[in-house]
Amino acid sequence: MGATIVSTLVALALMLTTAIATRSDAAPTAPTPIFVDAYEVEGDCIVRLLRPKVKLGYPVTWQNEESKKLTVRETKGLWTIELTADGTYKGRAWAAGSFRQDCDDDPMFSNTMRVPPKAPATPTTSTFRVTWAVAGAKAFWRYRVEYRIGSGAWKVWRPKTAGWSAVFSGQTNKVYGFRVATVNSKNGEASNWSPIRKVST
Image (cartoon, rainbow, N blue to C red):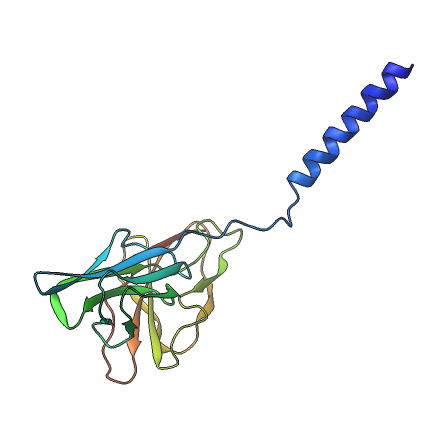
């Protein structure tokens, strides 16, 4: 009888330990940021991005590997990041598009960060939300959003919106593609198109 009680208590203790270890409200592990390195080689300023495709909203750290100030610019004027000597700037992939960045206005050694819009790959209904910008996006940015069905022609969904997302009403049993260009409303220039986000309804 006593052995049975002890066995039961041990089993309950193991169950409790497992439950605590797998609690859904446990603090999530912070994602490792994508690094954008800026450095000089024989007088040329270089921007290096080891993972050019970045998820929307994912943390990005710009990092100066030199002991002097460097400036990283998005070539359409969407952002400028001043890096102090050996300094870093912590941001994120604020919007969808393909963003070319150079260092100290040296276009020979630029690099491109490609950010697709966010949408469910297989939504439960044919109506779903598409997101193309997150907190931190600049107030002067606008967004051109297009879609297509299968491999058909691209159609304009949002020509120049300031909104960050919208609900798309599609049809069942279709494969939709979405792409985004972020527009600088100050000079009218736009990033290149984002990678395509596919949605199968």
